[in-house]
Length: 568
Image (tube, rainbow, N blue to C red; front, side, top):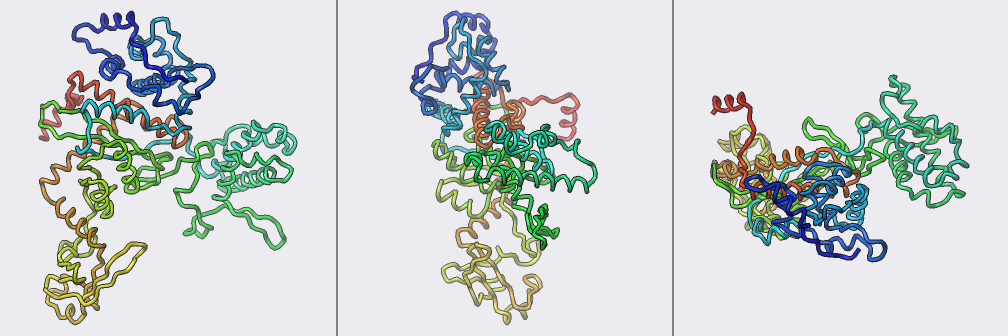
């Protein structure tokens, strides 16, 4: 691949575009992008993913633009290739003439594979944000908001019985494709094909629980037999390295145990939860959910249960008066794709690192209550100079819940002298620095001689030994107390209402680009799809802002408008 500048729009195509969109009619998104942003994705930015010798291929920069426009219109690869060949607006944006034959739709799949293989999943979003920074449409030090949503994997849901059966079937198919001669010599193909030729479907399985249990043990026995044949000394060693074989091995380890009875007979037993008297199951982050996508995991959030990933979306936000045109559009600055079992708080540092790499760290970051902790509030301010605007968990002590008596925040802490003073004026007698469940804390105790005769003891503690406080380190305690006090203030609550707008960004992403269900298998390709979708959404928002479309226009039926007016 030899990087080249994009050609200017063909004169005939440009003339047709000007004729079609003369006057007040708005030009299509692709035309606006080419006119206002120019050569957005240069070939040189993707040079690492392509060789320097061989037959010349299609421009990777223009393929990147096709991929983004494809997501903006939520098209398949075949439809996107047809648009590049037939749509004048796309030809204008790509610099193609009327006689250009375009490319085969399979080129897009190969392009994505190359991008993922060379770690360039975020390149299109990086290039767009760099260009927008030069236009002063996005900048560091502003306000941003982040929220997460669930992503359903591009594989079907499997129960444990289907999982082990499909794992054996996937390994058999991989071995048959990689080394058919070996499979024909080692296995009785007709017998194995009778059970594993068709995919394992729940509606084909026996309804009886007893027969289902017998079948799952049969699947496990077949899996162990297959692995024993693969790991035999006479078998080619490279067969063991096939991903499907390794996946089968992991599925069997996670779901079964093998023991030998007194008669030296091998017994296979299915694992069950430890609380049910079983051998225990691996934790959810390590438990495979499909042999065809080893990155996807089952997860639950409130009443939602899904198999897939989790997506974190960050966008700029600007408070504005009703009816005023915003000075800048709200633009997506980062998308982070994680395992579905990863808590939101564990993803926040990675989000801040990505924003720092793009030189787009905000001054204020609006988050829901799933993200913050005392550690993150302090570290975000110290490491990134970011103020987290987020509700923290309230005090869960008995006194705070009842809103009666003296909670921990009613005590005065003298950190320098390592002592605490209670509301009645008594001073603590001991201060011990300890580690509880891996967390550094200070346990402060008051003397029983002070607490027992105290006239307000019932408002303070029911302990016979006196009141005790468990305190986090000074920075964390002060940060959490300050945050709890702030979130009770009406001004803070009105400011925090700005966070709610990110829900609209997620809705737009899922509705416009079909983000809710992953198109591809694997975390890397799914993340590429998310960054491409974020880039497409930014272009859609820029197009609306360039054309003066307001942000507050929402389609409501007449009945909905009446309901809103009556409840106002």
